[in-house]
Image 1: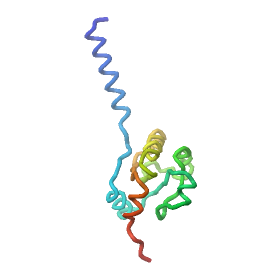
Image 2: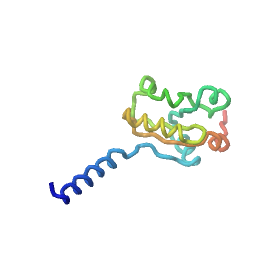
Image 3: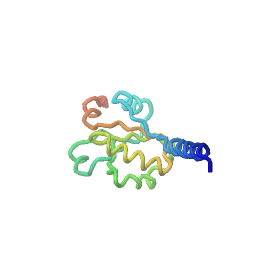
Amino acid sequence: MKPALKYGLLITTLSLNIITSISYAKNVSVQQFWQRQQQQPNVIIDVRTSAEFAAGHLNSAINIPYQQIATIVTRYQDKTQPILLYCKSGRRAEIAATTLEKLGYTAIYNGLSYQKLKTSQPISTP
């Protein structure tokens, strides 16, 4: 096989790998996170450990540790429903987002840091 053909096949293969690894998850700022929630209530998932969740979490958040995020399919079957994720730093939320993408979820937002989200959480009025 000619070197030019081998090179062309290599470039094509690498390009396909890049295209198929496009992420649906989007990192959002603290302001964007709360704007999304105010515009339309979304599912908020705290992917930290149960102990971290018990120590404090956002209002209306549910706890599904990132290692167990695949269990979401039993609760939320609409894979287009927006899901807002957060953890301590954003790392575990990104892992959870990748898992959700592989399961076919398409509206995933990573709010990153619990502490930043908590301090900027809008005050609920009765």
